[in-house]
Image (cartoon, rainbow, N blue to C red; front, side):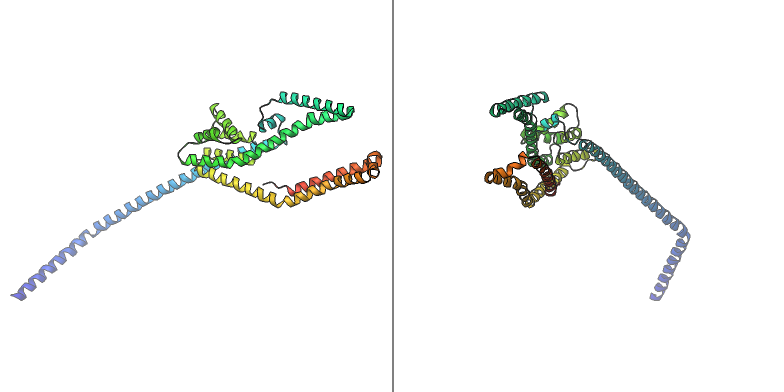
Length: 336
């Protein structure tokens, strides 16, 4: 009985295996077709995904190219403006008066210079009794001294701007990181900054109120403060307006660059101080020797001023000393 059950179970198993094999043989082509179709669908979806990724990458590349072209156009425009400004070897007297921080008009400047020159020339004529001396003093104090004073005040104001500008940039960086827009950061500097940065940023705010956008208003800063640092600031603002980006990071990098430039200038001045002292001693030595000879042997030195050959020697010496002074000046002055 037990042997009969085993035979029956075996027959049932063989029948089931045969039925399965027969069904697989019949349905094989359909199953294989569905599998191929599924693989084709997967490949199509993968191709569509790859195509979407390729399109997105191409769009990003096109956007980056457009942004790069916009930045290049902005830099080219700023470079052309700077070249146009650099072609002016010396700014006009009216611009220099404004750069010196004075509110006097050009007409009043000429009037005050003429009055000052006339007063000093009259005093010199009264004291010396020589009309030529009075005329010379009038020209010096009427045309030379006022212009020298304007140049002195202008250079002092430029140095004060360089000393305070990085601090103002740091304040702007912290303001922008805290969530303030660029307009409010500029207004904060114009209200709470130190001179002369406060005055210049106040003019930027006034230009915005008159309808200018921020890049145009900042680009005018270079006309009032003809320094590379002011030009860098205008370039950063123009690039950010054209291409976007992290403005706080850009301004922070600019502040760091300006501080590094200042440190480099200090190192160069310290290293060239010995050469400057030597140049000053060499330049003053002929005058010191002439003064000592005049005190000890006046008749010996006065031949240079009374004889025509002495005049020729003095003229040639002045020319050679001027050439030597210019050469030494170019050797010890460096542009950064």
